[in-house]
Image (cartoon, rainbow, N blue to C red; front, side, top):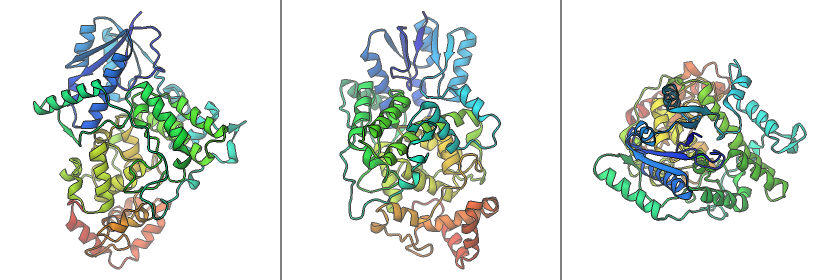
Amino acid sequence: MPARWLFADQLGPHFDTRGRRVLLVESRRALTRRVYHRQKLHLILSALRHRAAESDGVTLLQTETYGEALARFGAPVRVYEPTSWAADDFVHRLREAGTVEAVDPTPGFTMPKAEFARWAGDRPRVRMDDFYRLQRRRLDLLMEGDQPVGGRWSLDHDNREPPPKGVTTLDVPPPYRPREDDIDAEVRDDLDRWTRDGTVRTVGADGPRLFPVTRREALAALHRFLEHRLGTFGPYEDAMLAGDWAMAHSLLSVPMNLGLLDPLEVAEAAAAEYRAGRGTLSSVEGFVRQVIGWREYIWHNYWHFGRDYRTRNHFRARDPLPAWFADLDADAVEAHCLRDVLQGVRDRGWVHHIPRLMVLGNWGAQRGWDPDALAEWFQTRFVDGYDWVMPVNVVGMSQHADGGAVATKPYVSGGAYINTMSDYCGGCRYDPRHRLGEDACPYTAGYWTFVDRNADRLSGNQRMRQPLLQRERLADLRQVVRQERQRGDSPP
């Protein structure tokens, strides 16, 4: 019986090996192909090595390339569908050569690719809301017959509360924190050595491991979230506090993207909390929407839009990422929100979805940065970033570079949004109400610069009608544009 070659994001029991021998490969070349966050590489290597140590019948080969490992293993293997175009091409070349016997549908997502392709068909726009309703029905999650529990499919409007006034952290128990072991120490020593000899280049700080790398740890993190944090998650899922990097978020994206948790088991466990009266519907529905709605929508659209999707550039944004941003130099930044969020990426390789969208992505869109380069930055600097994760999230949702295939409007805003949804502005040298002058908020000024620069391409978007009309009434617009041009790509 052929062995099963599992990739580093296929490490949980739902990637069923059916008694087969298991091959894991730690390819040095895969670590050096890009400049990754140090903690991202630590998590991947630790997860692979822990999986190999957990059970008999698992062979971990540490080689320069995947091809070298397969040759050394010396037997045909079966694989599950990989999670990138490049890996998919590689696997199919191996199949033609006879090294891979078969490529099986991935159990890492609840809907098979073929089913999504049939459903999407030739629709000009694949809406998240339509897909989410389909998922709820086919998986029978939070349903009463054919209708959603509570009468509404989405309770998103109930989950947009700003942070409570006068607090620095949410009143919620902290997230699960794993304990490092000898395998983590070995990984850290290897990364230190490879960095010293120039084999591997990384960015970001090293640090104690914050995320699960084993099935046991992943389940503990899931249970911790469900029992102690889920109830607070919904109302404040879009809020930001400088002193609370995790808020009430689950922090499960890393173990899910390593394949340690089955997304259906996660969603069903959350739904069970509601049925047992231990979770509010708004929090449970919001979390379920993230897991079997948005996450799977992103996965399927990665394949649906095609391999050239990430090069779409509706606004013709061409500027490269400046060195201070690429290198995570948070200390160079004075704007409180951007400094704190960039510091979070530097120190943890993770911030939640609103800092990603409305601080980091918003800044990149306002400055006209190349969306492909920004997607690459998110993929390599975030510990949960993968090739399938970031194109639709960044190119589509964040930068609107696909011209509206995913989102109906660009997710850009001035400082007023950040001021409402966070505590950043109170201690900042910039004033979110001002767009001109020494204390002008760079987000507020940058917003109007973005609208002005892209007015022609925004003119057909009804959701941008009011900002475009307001632009025409701004007496100081030319001065604002000149001010931001002089700022250039200097850290704000």
